[in-house]
Image (cartoon, rainbow, N blue to C red; front, side, top):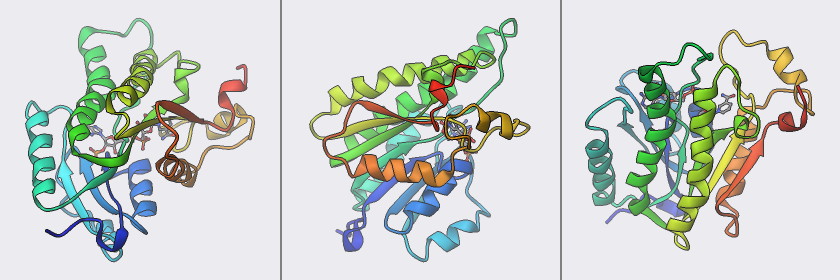
Length: 244
Ligand SMILES: NC(=O)c1ccc[n+]([C@@H]2O[C@H](COP(=O)([O-])OP(=O)(O)OC[C@H]3O[C@@H](n4cnc5c(N)ncnc54)[C@H](OP(=O)(O)O)[C@@H]3O)[C@@H](O)[C@H]2O)c1
């Protein structure tokens, strides 16, 4: 059976590998990984994948957090990959939303939507992926520096990321010693549209925003660190230490 790790290339799944940080990470990893990329909608017309396919084998899946068929879809896709000989040695969960929800605007529906996307979806993806991860694989989950200092206008989002901060060590216990689990608490790398970038940069010790390459380096470091598990690396330019 053909193995995905052709010529020693590892195969990774990037959940939310289509836009922004997910796409940047896919472009970096495609140099030396084969990739399964997921999105909430059809991949038709994504011509940038053609460039990646020159160096990597790329498969795409549609995993939509809002779909009632999500779990069966994930299971079917992962079984299909296994049947095709893909051995998954890494996965990164990037998908999320970043809604502004001030105190006074919370409703059961708005809270449920934020937590479905930012908490339930990563939980369900991790659960679906877990039995398909190869020996020594690393499952990486993107969190936010808000786990140290919650965003006051985005408390539901911050609470979801705090929930993922419990998932990382818990899952590391459950999947050890076969699989490692690592989180990344990111500061502003690609800020939301309309953000004051100079202000965000000024609130870090390093006086700059992050770069997608900063994330790619950290993800590669975690994957290549066999004694690292159950921990969350904070990658925020020192934002958490600036008191304002
Ligand atoms: N950007 C930053 O500076 C920053 C800072 C701190 C933390 N983070 C964290 O890093 C991760 C990536 O950040 P980002 O800014 O690149 O993310 P993003 O733009 O907020 O969202 C990531 C992906 O989530 C997917 N998504 C949205 N709705 C979905 C749904 N219903 N089902 C499945 N997927 C859905 C989207 O992909 P599709 O449209 O293709 O489905 C999108 O590309 C997120 O977890 C974020 O919280 C980012």
